Length: 164
Ligand SMILES: CC(C)(COP(=O)(O)OP(=O)(O)OC[C@H]1O[C@@H](n2cnc3c(N)ncnc32)[C@H](O)[C@@H]1OP(=O)(O)O)[C@@H](O)C(=O)NCCC(=O)NCCS
Image (tube, rainbow, N blue to C red):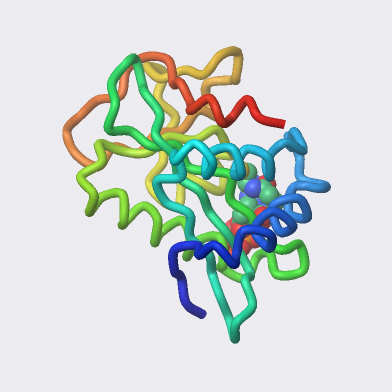
């Protein structure tokens, strides 16, 4: 299994994969595929990584710039998608670890996401009462700081997240 940046020929597969992964996912908005497309169109897909095995794409993760309390240098993780029949085999974890390491090397301050702490705590994400996102319960608002920068305030995602 290899992890590599998306290429133009992957775009249709990523769209189909994202729709399939979120079709029955809890809390899904069914706009996730449109969000990935909108981020790409806006040049805001900071990282778009696919996991590939024998030429077949098994998973995808997107990272895009966000601000936290007006501060930049932070990135949002997601959407992240694995084909339903390939889930729980470590594909999502390897994509996320790879992406976080790439962000670190880029000099990012850190990463935020809205998601289940039971899954994302394994990467070092923690709920931080100082970070918020609308009316989302605080335990689902997760952040991972790479250095000493403290994230404080409201997360603002790229406008591409309004797509769909
Ligand atoms: C979430 C997702 C990307 C994880 O990738 P994956 O390859 O299936 O997961 P991994 O093999 O890396 O990890 C498996 C572990 O994650 C857990 N897990 C998977 N999805 C989870 C979720 N949405 N919430 C909490 N835990 C989850 C599994 O129970 C398993 O736990 P364990 O290691 O304690 O047994 C994938 O399941 C998926 O595409 N889900 C549908 C879309 C979605 O919900 N995306 C996330 C929101 S942006």
